[in-house]
Length: 115
Image 1 (tube, rainbow, N blue to C red):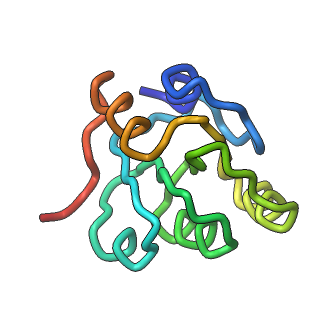
Image 2: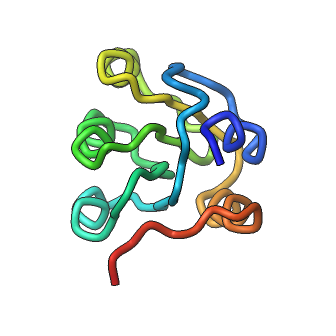
């Protein structure tokens, strides 16, 4: 799966465009960035309802290509600028986190956690 597939599956709106052809191996849905840092592996997409700069910083540290803001949340300009500088695609979707994660899973994307 690539980033543009995620946009289609989640009926997403691009906020900040990075590499839409970058391969995505796993997904993680969380509002707790400490959990993302502790449990995520491989390149992932992060689904979150949290809208602050720590989300972009966490995604960068974990080598994530894409962040999806659920429930139609809009990041402010400082978050968008930070993602642009880091080459991270930002997307928003109308779906709630559970539904968004379920749609990606149903389309073949696995969870990206270390258990």
